[in-house]
Amino acid sequence: MSLVVRAVPWDDPAGTALRESQQAEISARYGVPDSEPGPKPTAADITVFLVAFDVDDEGTEHAVGCGGLRTLDPSHGEIKRMYVIPDRRGTGVSAAVLGALEGEARGRGWDRLVLETGDRQPDAIRFYERHGYSLIPNFGYYADSALSICYEKTLAPL
Image (cartoon, rainbow, N blue to C red; front, side, top):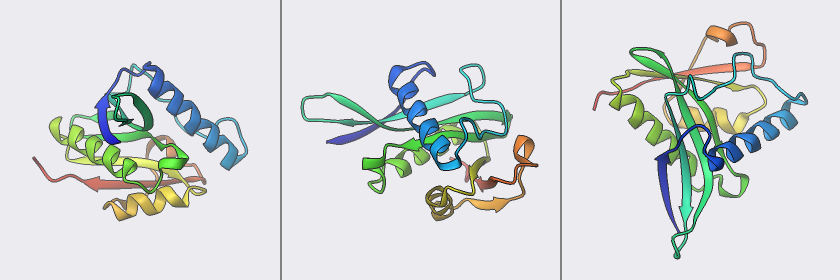
């Protein structure tokens, strides 16, 4: 199998299914149906949404991960809805999606990305720290959230 990461519309069925799986997992971890402190991402505010597909020898695609970018201002954005299906974690899918998101951000002239994750997501915390993201004070809608942990990364220009 090979891995392909590409932009899809927000309402793409593969992306929708991945986001629903992510939200179900987050709900189970936090014990509430919705733990998002801020507004949920929508087609209106997500600048780009990427899906990673495993492509088998016959060319059939299987969606295995996703992530999006929300524009915050002309020079930076926020990573939203990063997710990889459980049986593909630890195989490079998340790194491929994150790398593609960072490339999209650089292509837009952004010099910084921020993100929010939760205190019950140690796997996400380790992942972002391994990829050069630094802990920052909680920002925006997450400023008063005791469950939120926020990160940033300065992007080198292309």
